[in-house]
View 1 (cartoon, one colour):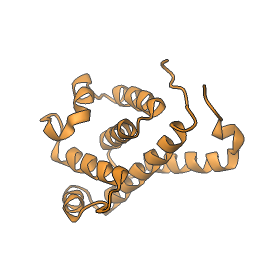
View 2: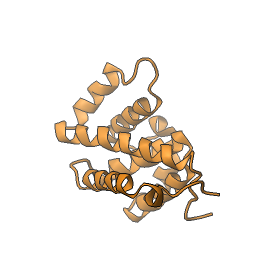
View 3: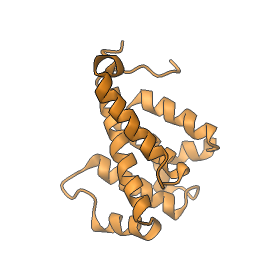
View 4: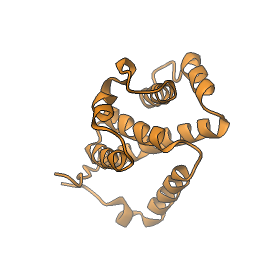
Length: 146
């Protein structure tokens, strides 16, 4: 059972988060990359609410079932481009944040595949989905598809 509805409990804060989400969606990062990052980070964080939502969004945007199935092992799959792999590598490193943080090697791949605005979009979407996951998991947000 969901513990709390943040939109009701803290509407002004929630409105700010939604405004940031809209800015990210309208930003320079490619929509396919954005969908993949949101879904992969949500998988890593175990946020069923976000996994459910972002799987639906990715499918509606044209993502294939094969690529969605391969996402959990993207680094082994030929289904993803070098650009997508660089984004997913960054997103995983930024989500896990061990002592090394995001290595220079991972960042160099991001710089190779993304211009500065796109890099900012990648950093923003990764941070934002981690924030949403940190609401969804502890608050037991229920997915649309039970």
